[in-house]
Amino acid sequence: MIRTLSTLALAGLAFGLGALVTTAPAGDKKDEKGFTELFDGKTLKGWKVVLQGKEAERGKTIVVEEGIIVVSGQPNGYIETEKSYRNYVVKYDWRYKRPAKLEDDEKFNGNSGLLVHIQGLPPKGTWPKCVEVQGMNKEHGKIFAIGGATGKFTFDAAALTKARNKVGEWNTTEVLCKDGEITSKVNGAQVATGKGELASGPFGLQSEGAEIHFKNIRIKVLD
Image (cartoon, rainbow, N blue to C red; front, side):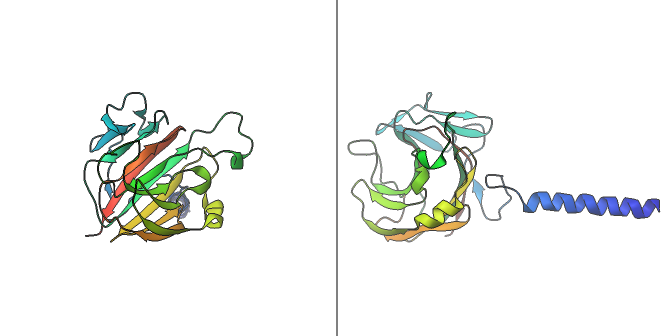
């Protein structure tokens, strides 16, 4: 009987652990084959900071706290990978700081974004020639070209509404870049796709008016 109970207990423990793994919420770090971490959880090694169109020190705008990149949103700018990429999948977890008095999530529209295929520093202004995968809460994942770049992209707002978690909770964004084609997913749901003229360059995460947090930034290079 003792052996039987021990066996059942171990089986129950194994089942419980399995359930914890399979039901992990968006934002939990997972062991994904082929992906390489781009954020070590302690520093911004491998990244450079661009604020108001110029390389800068991160200062108070971008800090690393307890394994999370905390972006204040002021002033406008971005962190950019030191390396350039062409065909790849990038994944990252994000959440906005939830305002204390926010009662209706649909009234919140914090702004940020992922900039892909960055073509050097901006010749003027704040943002470089690139393609933006929108980080704004209500349009997260929407794709459009900025800084003089061109492209044609479609956006499924209904899919985003169903997939996006509440303000203050972690979400996972996944972006596939392949020979100029770009597809974005939020928490596993495809929300936008299309193709532009640009096909390679560094990518970056924006500081644009609202406090946002990033972690688990990882990449899978396709070729």
